[in-house]
View 1 (cartoon, rainbow over the protein chains, first blue to last red):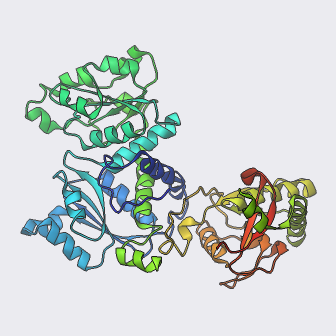
View 2 (view 1 turned 45 degrees about the vertical axis):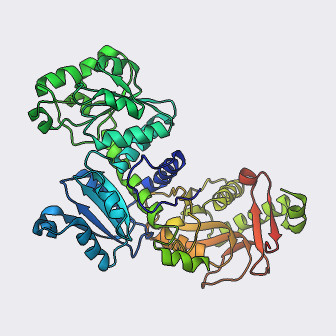
View 3 (view 1 turned 120 degrees about the vertical axis):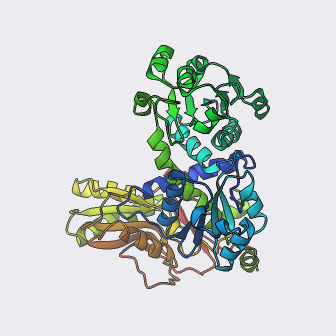
Length: 318
Length: 185
């Protein structure tokens, strides 16, 4: 099987085979981060720009580690330090960067579709590190890798995403990816954040968290953004916690093992209680570790094993 | 496998000859290292890993000591990633956390251009500073492109560069032995 994509823009357009290949490739990459010298030379000489138009700690650091452990040269551009504040457009900025001979762009952007827009206009490989409400494909992949590590498979698993599903790119990438891999996906949260229209994505809607706890193999708990409360999506954080927050009490009442994932950053005491966040059923830090391996696999598959540019492809085929 | 393909292959080593060679290499390793002290047998993915296991088995028979083993995948150290049209598969690497002070026996099935061994040396050195690295191969078929040689070789073959040397191992291929295939045309 050959990974022929030039960009990673979302999981919606990937096949199950391609997703499996990324996850399988990520497994041996985990070991590199356990070495004393955490570096292999495979992307030596490749230049990668991380363009972050939104704040990020975890994703940004995870990408940077992945790039550096593969020996790529990387530069981080945060929006506040960039020429965007002077009014430069995204495409002009990227073209200028390409004129300095870069190979890949990792982009996080508040507008859905910004990575795809860029991918159509520049030669470099583009990796989506989260765009608006659209997708966050590497988060979806690392969640799936973590689930596969814990259960040994994805097919037939029942995974429920709890929280602000409609505004969540993490939820969207998880839904597309898990469905393709044969998992059953559910969503749960207040009706303002989990509208009926989500059923079109092929997910089951759970109005009550108690039903989720009784049925799910794993729960992916999304962060509740405070802005949503200010825009009257739900009445109060306390009420959200009472109705949908994952607590030890609710877990005990369910009386069965449910694996808890959280993409971070957590609001302890809102969507997840502290004792659950630190408890036996969560794999939150394993997700973070897997994130580096998954991103290494994506970078390797997009850059390695085949020439990055069309002219080189033509040259090798001669 | 069709009959035509079978006829084109020439068998160089059968199972018995192959295992005799591996047993002899085990003796030579112990002789040259004056025992099994500090030895670490590292197989290169994939068939080198199986051959390394066998070597360790023979060393156990001869010396009564089970020496540690490791696996090495060299995909990320290859010098041809940009040039190969086929996506290589990354396999697992499993080595002790520190190889400093070890006498490493690197094991592969066929020694040809030496490029795999060059990559393996780079990879091993990223894990620490071994005392010595020695190379054991089942078949040395010549046509080196780098200044690399085997310390232990089961069989030295003179081959044409376009021929293919095929090593089959029971654990992977269901049978033991070494064959030469003429260049596929």
